[in-house]
Image (cartoon, rainbow, N blue to C red; front, top):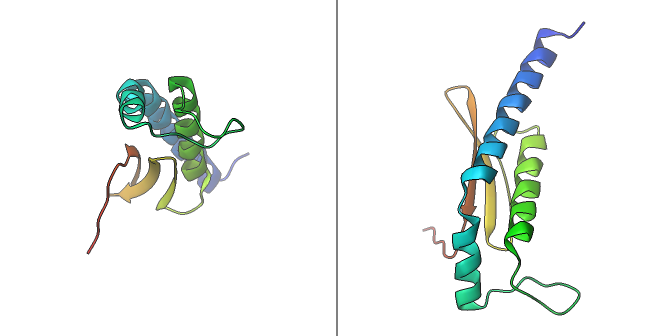
Length: 107
């Protein structure tokens, strides 16, 4: 029999996985891909660097979201290649976010 904490963790992970699926369905990977083509933004690979396909973009985003979901911390982030995945907590609810960042500045 699972403890109350284990049941809560399973529910939380289910909710986060649902959010991950919604993000992957609704994020505009085509827009990111078109921008990367326009500015010739390449990711390093065995051939020296290519603009990633939409499928590769989705796979990378999925992996980053999985990484923050699996973090035991309430606030977590992971990023690479322009993507940033975040897990935040507001009013006892965890929220996943996915960004594609082309510029950032902080004072």
